Image 1 (cartoon, rainbow, N blue to C red):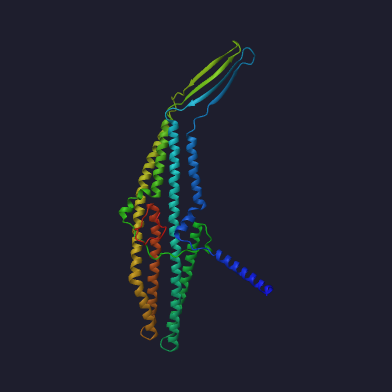
Image 2: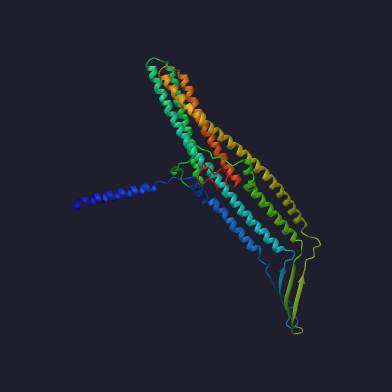
Length: 420
């Protein structure tokens, strides 16, 4: 009895391990916060973090004092008449050069950090847009499949009516052509879904064929805060932050060039041995360049012009960000209004009209042209609904990227993890 049950127990254990392995291999659904975390951990963003570390090292280097110079001078070759001098020279920076240099390096750190923050915001917005693009594409594929099923049902009804001699065979041909159109729409929707999955997978570093998304409220666009409130945070937009950082760096560079107009002092201390008199003498020297020809006026003038350029670029970035923000906000509100109108007023009626028209055609109350018209209206309304949602989520991602702050009204309609 023991010998017979052992193979069964081993078989059960192997089956259990294989089942557990297959269950473990199934990827867990990814929600939006998890997708954002995966995208922020990709190499492209880590490369930007290295630039921050490099800029901090530049600050350390900028604060270093100049190295002293050791000089050895020998005059004459014959013993008893030659002179040997050894001295050490230390440059002394004047005019606040070191302080200006450190300030410039610190502005480089600030610029690198703002660039990192802007890049993180860009990645986050790209993930939001790509994530909802996949969800909307999935819904469009489901819509296309349902329309294929509706078209198949229409073909069946038309075929029965033709067989019974109630309608012309032309109606069955029309039904089959409508089924072909529905199949073509399904193929296009499947292709769009594959492209959207590939783009999202590339952002989060996951294989596209194993990508599974968690259930989401893709069909419900959240309500945004008023435009006036969101425009108040436009200074946090990534382009504005970049332009402001560039301006601060140009101003710091101007301070460096202005400090460079002050000549540096070089102090020398050493000892000289004169064989002719047989003793050593102390050597003290002081050296100062005479700014007769080069007073760094060219470099200072260039720095001032670049600072003025950075000021104009900051103003242009603020104007462009405000314009882009208002445009994205308008597109979002239009898409949200259209999606809500279609979902509440159009889609229920289109579904009911199609069902009644098909049933009426089956009983000879309507022509097949009426069925096709109802089917076309249903498809167009559903397609417009998902197109509006897709455009709305794209505009939402752009608003999130520009605002850099919470943009939605905390009423429970926001997808978890969407807000910063």
